[in-house]
Length: 394
Image (cartoon, rainbow, N blue to C red; front, side, top):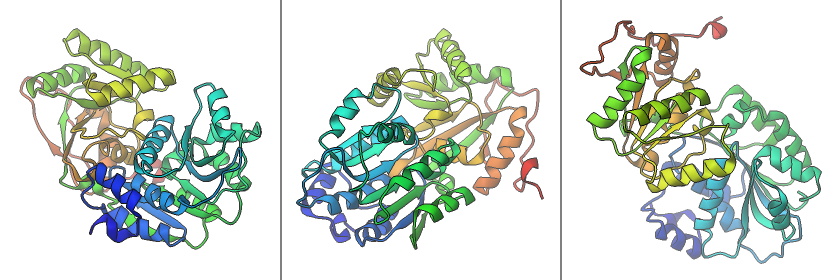
């Protein structure tokens, strides 16, 4: 199927062709016609499946009408959990709207609000915002919602994980009742369904690639190692296999700084990104990583969502996450939109509980590899696929 079959107009088809999109992904095939029909939608789709285009393209199609914007008004609101994701969604909007006369802006905290207020004075067709900064602007009467037509909740599960439920509810209370609602989430948990009931009426539901992490296009493997050998093992892998780039996930910002120092002592230049760094520094590091000026980026969980790095071939779980779904989100940074990727995890004996939960979530045991010179003293048992954490046992 081609994009021309989805009901998109020539300016959008031209923009998509410029980006070398050969054909729509599965989520785009199913979601775009639903959105264009004016129906509310709940869509479960892993990152990397092309979900941003699945709501941005039809929104642009429907907003492309002769209508004069009033000051401080917006026509479409896209809520995202992180600043990085807000910036990246807005960048996608700019690409898709290249041949349209529609305006968009990303609005987020951590930066001075003056420029954002100034831009809102003229009105915005599509506003991409994080919940906290949006509420702050609304309280300051820097924008109004009375002309809003569309609401998109992007990465809904992540927003709930980050504690934004109260902010989201306050935002929804301010919106016009007559609007089209779209909710996209990597996982549809009970909390996400509860949010959907409050925000969405009689939605169409679509579920795409809920276990995309287990597909062969992302080759997953792990190495068991003693905890104290992890940094030496990672350095060995980088040098031995001549890795050119890797996104390396770690649990704490202190651990991120320490690992960067350990890698540099072995002649491997790396940078770290975490919540303790300023927005300007984070944006510059991400830009340098995307452009290839930085080859190895150590990231805490705050960057597990919202990173969209084209052709990223490899992610490394230096630490396993405490939540199995977080593992899915992390490795979804590679193998995006049908490309091939590789996900490697360094697993010590104290990670056994997390490993069991992850493999139960995947539905299969992750392949193990042994590296000469890094034999373990504390053996990591083969995991239990039906493992249930204590706090969830009946």
